[in-house]
Length: 309
Image (tube, rainbow, N blue to C red):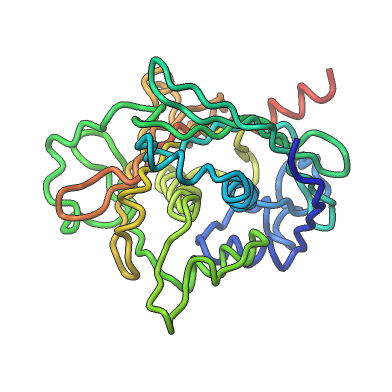
């Protein structure tokens, strides 16, 4: 098992992470967390994507130390796939330990390199799951882009004819640098103006999903204080070939809609129920799929009830 390093997110790290991704969730705000009805966390908590970015960095070091980067290139494992379940929240000041199990490589029927991962905060499980490197994405088929027209001329924060909510974001190196710092990572591994190096990390574009989901909820007049929602799991596939093409100021079009089984209970429904969202990050004139994600949320009320059983 790899990594006995203990990390700590301070509130400053949390603030920088939420500011760099435009995440205005009350759970992360050092003042507004108190407005959340029956909030069991007794203070602000770190961002799920912030923690996943920390994991991405630890895995990159892990891969480099075992010469697995060449293995990934040799077998054309162009997709990074993250699947995590959130077991508990991480608060500023808590010690965090990322545990990475030894890599497992299988050549048949399709080549795949995988690692089990667990994250503990103060010794208690906070997150568990895996990362897999594959030839094809593990999650979600390609989206149906019929009837959407040219995305760059569609209004920001609109609902498209095919049911997707559109949120337009722009890739900014300054935001990515800050997000890396907030995730306890070295920004110089990705950006260096003197060397004309621009390399966006994997999780950063995906982290913009939080603000997109929140803005979608605003459109539905969702009450974030009385009906807060929390992540229960993330399933994310990222195309590293497209990621390498991203440059500063590129437009990223984020498309979101409830998964089929969740269609009758959209975010904003006063009757709170668990929800799954199909999410896509598209860029370029041909709407190439940079990432796809299945994001699961559940009302805090249901978690609190489960805690008291």
